Length: 96
Image (cartoon, rainbow, N blue to C red; front, side, top):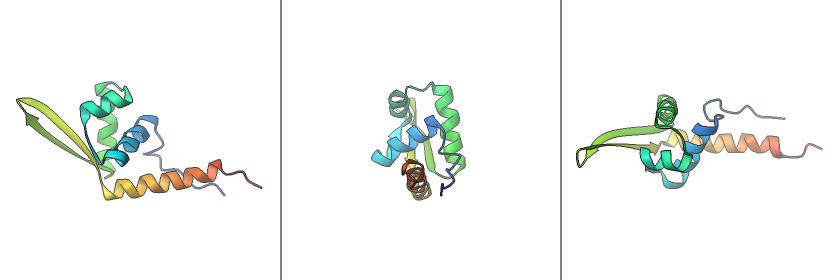
């Protein structure tokens, strides 16, 4: 039957963030913001939720006197994303 979907990943913006990070493993906040077209505030909140869940690591530093935030997917995040996709496929299969 239908598998339960991870509520952390079942958000459009959080799923978009994870989808980007699955492909590149690590990305700057500005890159994610540009690709998702999210506001900085909303993106910041969603990144924090993913960090709190252990799905991503966030590194804050300075580069040429400017703040630089980098997000990196964790092994737990990769496993959660793969499970989410697998469970979502149960919804897409035609039930006979």
